[in-house]
Amino acid sequence: MSKRKILLVIFLLILLMHCLSIQVEMTQIRTVTKVVLVPLLMIHLLINRSLRLLGYLPLIALLFSWIGDILLLGDEPAFFLSGMIAFVMTHVSYSFTFLKIKQVTPKDRSYFIFPLLALLAFSLLVFFYLKDYLGSYLIPVLFYMVFISLMAALAIHTRTNSKIQTLTLYTFIPGALLFVVSDALLAINMFRVQHIVLEVLVMLTYGLAQFFITRGFQKTAEFSE
Image 1 (cartoon, rainbow, N blue to C red):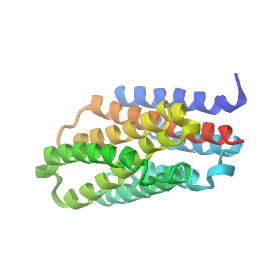
Image 2: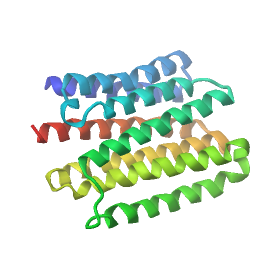
Image 3: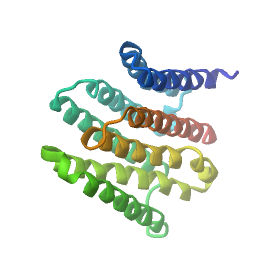
């Protein structure tokens, strides 16, 4: 097995272990596996020298994700709000990275605008489904949905970069869309329907989202060497 893939395989195995620990309610394993997931992706980017082309924004995005993961382990409302802010910074960092990969121009802006409108429509459906249960989180959740929709739309727009057009179809685009799905499921599970299956799906989609996006950054850097 290539050294470049070892950490990714370990990541997927730990993600599987984490999802199983949720299902069988093994709290300690669940906590440990969640905390180590994102650092594996950070190390993967570092040892593969994927930051030479894209700068440190992907690493910063993962760092904020890691902080968010830790904060969301807490039960107090302040932890959830702080975690949400951390993930907003993740989406901002990812957004600027996607813009670095492919700027939005008048010629190709439709590849950004139409996906953004579709993502905002989906977010609004989720928002109206939850709004009576959000309480004081109503405005923060609405703003969060805007940021994640922008990030996902910019990820889809990277397909207009002809050098990585095919690559985006199995990295950035599924990764960003899985991120949107994961956060929608998280909100539903937290505010309206609590179920262990939803908890598993939240972490499975989140882990795969980070995996695909990180893989995309690595391969983009390789194609540019």
